[in-house]
Structures are given as structure tokens and as C-alpha cells.
Image (cartoon, rainbow, N blue to C red; front, side, top):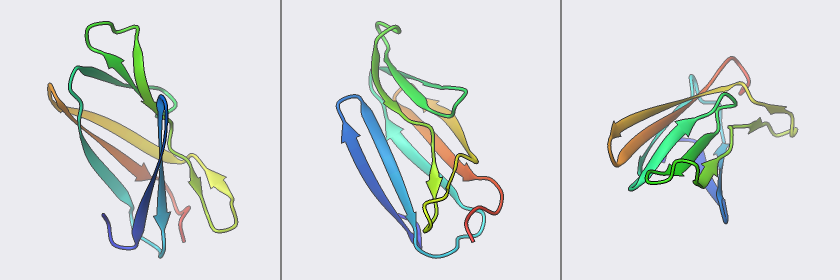
Length: 105
């Protein structure tokens, strides 16, 4: 995936939770992912979560990626992560997590 970073996925019925495990300090951590999303419309929310809607029925939520959250080795948490979403084409998106500030040391 990325040097010094492991990725762990937790999947529930309508929820995908990612855990990024940063083993050593990473300067300016920016994590970008590409997804194939057939028949879905993706919308980033104010809290940085992403909702995936059925493209034929935009009131139907198919699943959601929660807003990013960080924990350090002392279990101190931070939500100081900016998420961006880019529609590459009809069936492909990329989303990027940018860690803001000096949280990881």
C-alpha cells in the first residue's frame, strides 16, 4: 500500500470502515484511493463522510464511508483530516485523505 502504513478494512452491512496503521512517522501523509462505482452516485458530506446512492433512486443510500478519524498510540483521537472526492468518469472515483497539522509525530 504505502511505506510504513498498513490498511485494515472493517465491513458491516451498509458501512465500510478503514483503519490506517502508521507504523513510523510519515511526512505530509496523503492517502489516495481509486474505486470502481458502477450504478452509484457518490457525495461527500460536510463531516467528510461519503455516501453512495443508487443512481436510479438518489434517495436510496447503498453504503457510507464514515468521516476519517485518527488515533495515536495513546488512543488520543483527532478528526483533523481533510477528505476530497473526485469523479474520474461515470464509474470511477478517487478520494484522498490529507492529514492536517503535526498530529503524527
